Amino acid sequence: MEEEKIDQELPAPPRFRNTFFKIATLTLLFLVLFFTIGFVGLETSSSSEFCSSCHEMKPEYYTWKASSHGEVDCVNCHIEPGVENLAKAKGNGLVELYKKQTQTYTAPIRMPKDIPDKSCERCHNVYKRDVTPSGDLIIPHDKHKNEGIECIQCHSGVAHAKIADRKITYKTDYLKWNEHQGKSIMSDTKYTKPQMDTCMECHKARKAPLECTACHQSSMVPENHKTSEFKLGGHGKIKPSDLQTCDKCHSYMSSQSYDFFKEELNYKKYLNNEQTGVNIQTTVSQYAKANTFCKNCHGQQPKSHKQSLFHMNHGKLANDKKNCYTCHDNRIVGDEPVTQVACATCHPSSHGNTWKDRHPIKIAENQKISGTCLQCHSEPLCNKCHSLTPNRRQK
Image 1 (cartoon, rainbow, N blue to C red):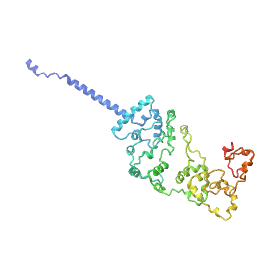
Image 2: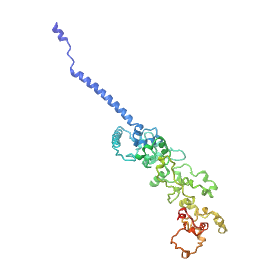
Image 3: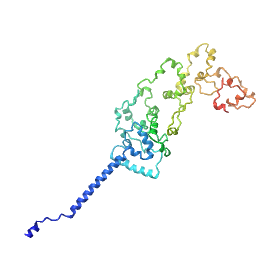
């Protein structure tokens, strides 16, 4: 009986079975822990707030937050779709972390390459965006896409207002950045929205249509331009401070270039929360002589000048020289004339041709009137023909 009991006892389980279950359990826990940490790390490092944890990225973060894309995470634009691109981006992140710790990164920070169209097309369907902006603009995105125009060529400042190009992201400036600074930077629409200059330069280079009707549905003529008063002289009474507004359209009507409204690069104003803009020093007369659109019209003799007795009575009108000098030149001031008819055409100099020989002090061949002349001569009398600028008055 004892032998039968021994035969019926089950054999002991092999040792390797317990070992297998232990290893499998530990492996499973490790994998769960690994993927959990990886997922949390991936989600955390993909958030826009994570980007702002480095003070080097504060300008980019605060401008993005104040932009129209402030609800779109950074990775949605800066990382192309696909697992492979995501892995590359995270690898590059480790390189950037090394540069940060070793202080070897280059400021201002710039993206190694432009935002690809694929990133934009995650949200935007360019083939259905016929008219995006307000007003009468016609923006056929599909035609631009078919011609190989990339989104970034027109919309490069939509999220960060071109802060790297504006030189306001250097190391010494990081501590000055906050939400208020970001909103201030993004409020300047000439850096965030496509500008007409960009459109015109591209159209000229590609020999695309340049007519107003190519991009605008209306005639683009302001209502105040349509009145007879404006056409017959009212436009000459505009304030010099309004010339920059006029120039937004009329600059493209001039065949000659000029730089009256060239903006100075002064990024310190932005960092100090000061107002920026162009220092307006150009007069209406100077503008009218530089823009060929104005010159072509002013070069035609007005009807009032064709009256039979105008040459006898124009002296009364000449009391207001500013109006005359819009077209004419007295050939002493030196401004570029709209017409070749000048004061000196009919009114020769009262000095005569030999006045320099008779002058008690030797006069240079190209001598201009200056403050020294007024030590002996009467300024009101000289001003009838000469123009004494503040710089010359000090000489």
